[in-house]
Length: 267
Image (tube, rainbow, N blue to C red):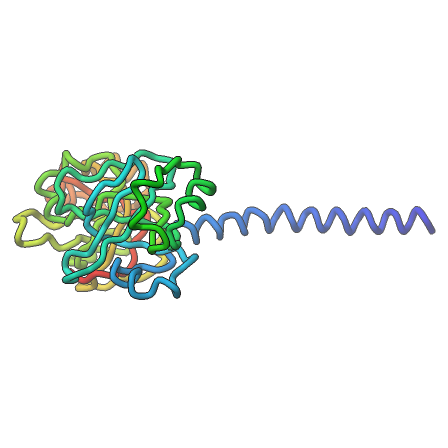
């Protein structure tokens, strides 16, 4: 009887361990997917106006850098909103991020909204921020960024792609042409005189986008070489589409997207 009970208990443990082994990767993958998608896509004005509601939440903002404060801090503000207050961004990504040389090029920052308390930030992120530089930001809203990217317009990219090749960028634009579930173009800004930007979504899209919709796309920019793209991402384009893409976009920039989602700021 004792041996039977031990055998029964061992069987239960084995089943539990097997279930745990199956469920743990699924949970991990879900967490990774959730971390990759911004929880709240907002403007800096909304962060200022709704600080208490956003404290502790992860947000994504696309805005213009105003002033560099220290090696890992700078302020941003939405120029299109008159009188918008600047917000402090703290780079806690662990990667060096250089502000764009063109002051009109916006950036995208994703991170947690917090009230800035320098003692807490230094304790939590070991950044060694000097207190004298941050007196005016104490107890003000700040974004503790876990990811940062340049956010040029589609026309800026297609006009001068060498500035962005190989870099992670975040682009806002109007969906101009959807060729299939994995291919679309973003409308260029007529002020820049560039061409539409080709976007490839190598993963099965999580959300449907429509022509005319303003979206934000994050990914890496590279020159378009149809054979390389198709091979690397296991795409199955028919010969007619291959020839069309080759004729229109050969060696032009293409944005290989990680995420596509609605933009908080209209074009």
